[in-house]
Amino acid sequence: MTDIATSEAPPSGPAPKISFVSLGCPKALVDSERIITQLRAEGYELTKSHGGADVVIVNTCGFLDSAKAESLDAIGKAMGENGKVIVTGCMGAEPGPIIERFPNVLAITGPQAYESVVGAVHEAVPPAHDPFVDLIPPQGVKLTPRHYAYLKISEGCNNRCTFCIIPKLRGDLVSRPAADVLREAEKLVKAGVKEILVISQDTSAYGVDLKYATSPWKDREVRAKFLDLSRELGELGVWIRMHYVYPYPHVDEVIPLMSEGKILPYLDIPFQHASPTVLKAMRRPAAQEKQLERIQKWREICPDLAIRSTFIVGFPGETEEDVDFLVDWLGEAKLDRVGCFKYEAVAGAPANEIAGAVPEEVKEARWHRFMAAQQKVAERVQKARVGRRVQVIIDEPGPTVSKGRTKWDAPEIDGTTYVASRRPLRAGEIVTVKIERADAYDLHGVAVG
Image (cartoon, rainbow, N blue to C red; front, side, top):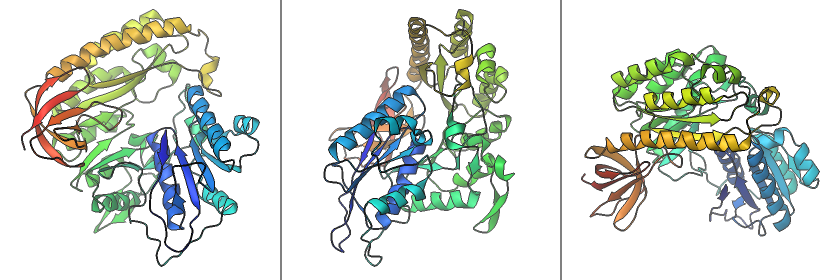
């Protein structure tokens, strides 16, 4: 959960105060940034205190029951401490549970409904805006540290995975024109961002809805296509990290850009499982049966490639043989970073109708088995990095030891590199570090340049 505050206030008299809570994934965080940028442009001040705010906005997550419970708790806290609450985000797409618990919220909107949220704020507390003094940086208000930022290239998803309701909440794929994305990226770089994390619901499907139409960028036309966008982003001179990449065949075309150092050698691919039977029941897109062969070819082209993924155990109908297949697959794939979730039924998801529900205690046992198998893989991968000199971006400077990340690690979800240094390091600085030791998740080293 992200509570958002800034000390800036417009000098043209008392400014209305907004308290903002952002829940869920990085894509929801970008939605929050867009809402806040608009509100700040209109002279609203942000405060961390619900009690001292004129209105509270809660950007919810509605994917899993646990996420819905967290959202309802956040709404309840805001109602208790303030009483004037606007709810937005994925849970707002199906507002029944919110209205049932909190019938007196001021407004409820779905995801990406920026104008509706701002309109609800206007109705609750009109802006006190002075266009001559209220200034917003060109890159907008960002909720991440100054040295990295998320860049959302599309909304929605065309896939119909049986465990997922994202298309129901956010609609089908809607891609931004390439030039629009590149303009935003350029503004981020000019503002000092050193790492751009490209996100969407399905990054490698980017542009299919636009039929890969071109748009004018500088002195050329750029197609709205994963490869073309990756190539152009790679010319900006900062770290470019690709998230939520489905392994469609054309992803192979991007691997040489990683080998050339244009974009980071990092792929976040949500494989979700390895058993063909389970993948078929999940209705996962792309040709999954040849993934091990493709991963091997990717690493031949780009030996430094890091792959992170997420998996689900305990999906309806999953057998012990399926789990055996998955664990064996993990050992062969040698993925660098892996997360695993126990299947959780999502209201409205087709998977709820699949026979063969797995008991909770069996899910738990399979989860532990999965994690134990992956930890052995992770330890081998990490130990292979000891002795190497690698680039590390500093996230949290310290007096003698700072926290940072290698090109193989995304913020918040992957590992940390602890960097000892004789000189002070700055947040966002990229330093050369000699790796001296490793554990299953983190690296430890000394700054050497």
